[in-house]
Image (tube, rainbow, N blue to C red; front, side):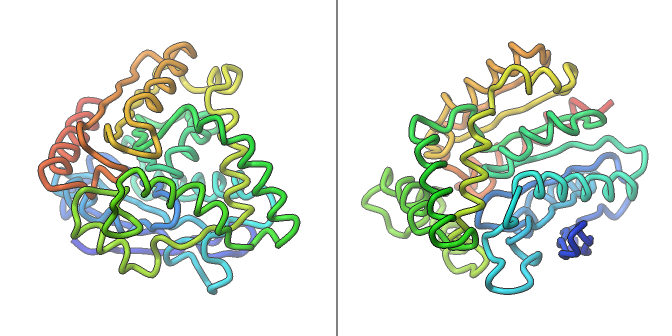
Length: 310
C-alpha cells in the first residue's frame, strides 16, 4: 500500500494536501478522513491499510495549517484569518467532491476524529445529503461550562496579539489540562493513548502537538455552542447512519457522557440509526491505542461500515 497523495487548490489559492490510499482491486466504497487538531492525515495509514484490504478507497485531507498543507511555518496551526471554521468546511467539501468524482457511484462515508469530528458534525448539517454514513471519533455534544468563557478569551487574545498568534493559553486550557488527568505523566501527550510507542511517535513528529492559533481556537469554541441546536440538527438527513466511538478515559469527550448527549440530540432530531460504542480504558486516540484495543476498534469499525453498505 502506498500513499498516492495529491493537492487541491482551495478558492483562496492555498494548496490542500490529500493522502489517498487505493486498494489493488475494484473499489467497494470510499472513506473520507477528517483528522484532529495538531496532527495530520498520514497518521491514519494503518486504518487505510485495513480498509484497502477490504476493498475500500481512503482519502485523508490535511486541514489548512496542518501536515503537508502548510506552506510556511507561520501557517502552522491556523485555518484562516477570518471565518476559519466555514473555510475548513469548504475545503472538506472540496475533497469530498474530488473523492466522489474519482470513485463515481461508490458509497462514501465520513470519519471525523476530535476536532475533525466537530467539523464533521457541522458537515452533516450542511452537506449530509449523499453521505452513506458518518463515524465520529472522540467527539462530544457538550464542550463544558468553560467553553463560552474560553471563546471570549481566545477572541480577545486574537484581537490583542493577532489572529495568527499561537495560543499558549489555549494549550494550557486543553492539551495540558487533559494530560494532568494522567499524572504522573511520562510525556506531555500521555492523554492520547496507553501505548507508549504511539505516544512517542506523536511527540517526535514535528507536525504533531504544536500550538494552534487564537483564531482557530476561537472558531472551534464558538462552533461548540451549537452542536446540539435542534434547528441545525433538523437539517441532517434522517436516514443518515451515525456511529459515535470514544474511550472511557478520553479527556476530550469525557468518556461516555459526551457522545451520549450528542446521540440523544440526534435521536431527538429524528435520526433513526445512531450507535454509541465506548471502549473501556481507551484514551483519546482509539486507533493508536494498545494493540488489543485498537485492533478491536478497527474490526468493529469495518464491521459497522460493511453493515451499512447499500
